[in-house]
Image: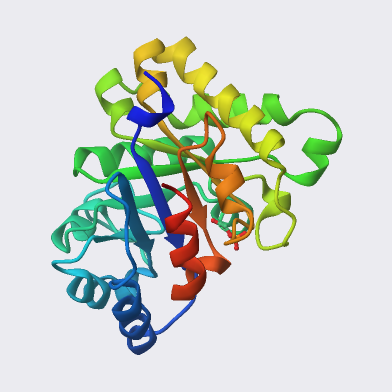
Length: 254
Ligand code: PGA
């Protein structure tokens, strides 16, 4: 299967930005952007704004996603949110294992694996984030880090579960820094991710997998990144907060 047959998913990661009122206002503008036929557009908003966002996006081409999801259905896990709760609002996607969660909140490959499995059980597509930091890139261990994170995230998954996932390659040194990986650097790692998935789940699973790039993707660099053979979409932080920037990225996914 070639690139043309894969799902293109452009996802905004709003991180800890915008209150309910601002969420409504921005989504009102986003609803009017033109979305090419084969592109899925998602906004992963703070959990508290999911009800407002879901209501605002209803009937439009926009899907609402979460930024995290716990693996248990319910219980004594103060501050966490379950996939069952997300499902109630029709959430279609959830980021899992974002580098900020790994860095500041102790997320490990094991918890990423459990969170992704819980999403899949509830019909939510996990956007599994992997990526090396600057030190790892500079000392030449990027592929080792990616291999460990990818294998850990999908450990024990069936082919069917794998088919329900997205993997996002987000080099930590490129997130929020304005330093984008070059299209060649991004392509190289995304191709490696596809190879790893092929080794575990077979060629067909690998060829069908949507792989996103994330890290300072913007209106200027999106077209080149998205034209690479193994980059099927983007996970976008800063540039997903303003409709005019985001619209250009979506348009360049064509
Ligand atoms: P950025 O964030 O686009 O602001 O670099 C990307 C992300 O963290 O998902």
